[in-house]
Image 1 (cartoon, rainbow, N blue to C red):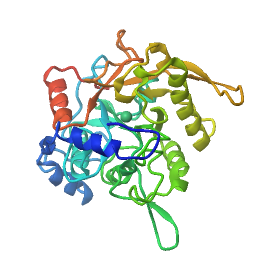
Image 2: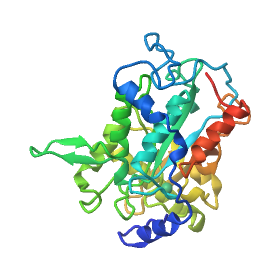
Image 3: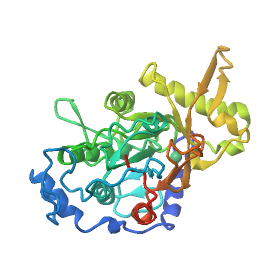
Length: 348
Ligand SMILES: [Zn+2]
């Protein structure tokens, strides 16, 4: 997808073009998930298959068909990559609400529990019960569909239950052990509302004044904030000073929303590296107006593809090259199937 500094039609045109690349419906996430979800929402511990008997011990949760896998701390970790969550048909950069919900059900049923990139860097798997596996959800581009507010008659704001965050919060209510752990790689100055989840009512009714409140809500509620540049620049095509401005400018904007927040992760727009590769994780932009230097230093750099990433316990784990799985078609389910088949899945 193409973003620009000034709002325009380029992004929409690009998305339409990309749509022809991946029109699968993602229904492969499993026909039994609806039944499992229903059982969970009814407060019953039984799954559709009757295999799960109790949640009292916390080891086996409703809808989860795993029963404690053997530990494998050298196994791979799936880092899932989402963009827009909306629409009536899946495409390269769009996942429908139904497919996103199905994805959540599927990874839960397989015994995955969410952590952030920062937790992976810290080898912190405290949110994953023994015998289960970590999964990292990453939301790129700060689209309004990921995090929308609905304003009530009295002016109060509530999270739109059909936005990504709203769906996530509802999922927590019916799925024991699922927490607010995901990584949001945000833009703060791109076109088409990709500015901290919407800067104009024409993008899903979102108000510019709500942007910082959303970013702060994420940080306050357990999610990780990640730098994705100001407006999604192709870093490979620009000189060093502009690359550093894109990265440091986004960091400064996040700091304006959440003062003092320490960003640890950057996602490369389009997966494109700057000519001077190291600038992706370390650099300094000096404001020409004030002469003030704004250094940045991140520990992790996310690529756009490449499959499940190495464990942080693996000597070959390279935090500057964290690979991901795009939420396209049935790629997530296929990848998780393969991890099980090859017994190459990280299990705590
Ligand atoms: Zn992006």
